[in-house]
Image (cartoon, rainbow, N blue to C red; front, side, top):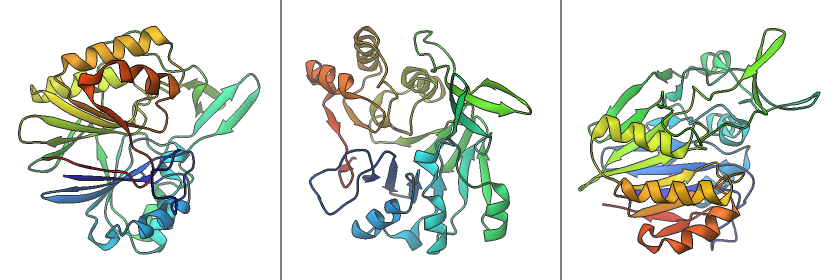
Amino acid sequence: MKLVTVMDNRGGENHGLISEHGLSFYAEFPTLKVLFDFGPGKDTLANARKLDIPLPEIQYAIGSHGHYDHAGGYPAFVDVGLKAPLVTGKGYFLEKYGVEDIRATYLGTGFDESYLQQKGIRHVECDGFLQLTEDVFLLSGFTQRYPFETIPERFKLRDGDGWRPDRFDDEICLVHQLKDGLFVLVGCSHPGILNILSTVEDWFHQPILGVAGGTHLMEADEARIRKTLDVMKGFGMKFIGFNHCTGERFRQLVTEVPELHAVYLGAGDSLFLE
């Protein structure tokens, strides 16, 4: 397996790439090539070209959830010929906002299903479990097992003339079968990274050897992060590639758990796994 960070908040050693608030990965498996999230805008496409990502060979475009920083770059890829089916969770195109006091900021994808229809792109929804190939799967509907993994109240859905909390029911993760266990790729982990990983464990009953992506721990306190790292060890985890919304506090505390072998995956950084 090859995993390439196409877009992230931070850059890696390749200073010719653009870094901005968002996330996108290219993942190459033995039986499949996918684009997982698309960053916030057209600069993600520019990075993909500089990284020599084989866009014509991508078989699925996968949207982890319907926020602009993961979805806004998608039309730029379509404009240069990406026609692979778009796979999302249910509710990906709902009207998402960040709400503080009387101010609301639109955080949604910036396109909808009618755009896909106009472009002749098939939309596939993952409702619980979706098998893409013999060794690549998608999951949604994460069990809320860890009560301390809360979603900030500012995330809202516009519902008619009112608001309701965004529980991120549209969020999905990717699971890849490795030789001795599982690898999990996440977008932002709004439902909680441990809730996601425990749901994966419930489905597959195998060790989770590694995880990469955003964990949305940037607002978490030290106690929650330490608890998260302790539980991660219990999954049999050997490595963490963290990104985007994980936060500086996690970056500091994870160095105290050397058995997890954690690395930041900035734009242009890669992982090669067996």
